[in-house]
Length: 183
Image (tube, rainbow, N blue to C red; front, side, top):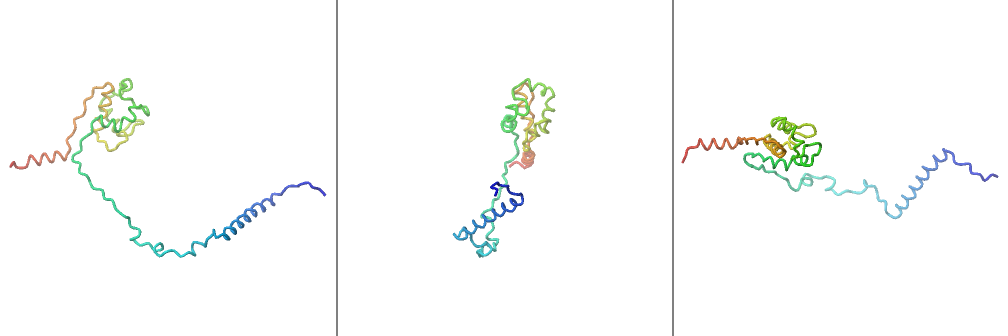
C-alpha cells in the first residue's frame, strides 16, 4: 500500500466546494429556525388595512409653501466694486485660470489697449476660460460694464463708468406724475 496523496481532480473540487457551501447554509438556517430567528415569510403576515390601501388623506403633504412675489421696485445697477467683490474677484484677485489680477498693470495693458467696448463685450459674452457675465447670468450689461471699469481703472486704465439707464417703471411713474393735474 502506498500512503502517497494523489491530489484532487478538478471534477471532485467542482462538486465538493458548492456542496460544502450548501451544507453550511442549511446548517445555519436550521439553527436560526430552531432559535426563532427566522420568521414566517412576509406574505403570510397580515398587514394593517391603513398600510395596504393608503388614501389621499394619508399621503398628502403636511404643509405647502407659497412664495410671494416681492415688488422691489425698479432695478438699480450694482456698482463695479460690488460686482467685483461678489462675482469677478474670485478669479481676478487670485489670478485663477489665467485671469489678469486686479492691480497688475502688466497683465492689463494689452487688454486695456483693446478698448473699453471690447473688454465689456468679452465680459458679457465670455472669453477663453471666463464664462459669460462671470458666471452670473443675473447681472445686467450695465453691472458688467461697471465691473470692467472698476477692474481696469484699478489696473491703470482711465475708463469712465457708463451712465446708468433709468428703469422703465420709473419712467412710466414720472410720466404719470407729470400728466396728472396739480391740486
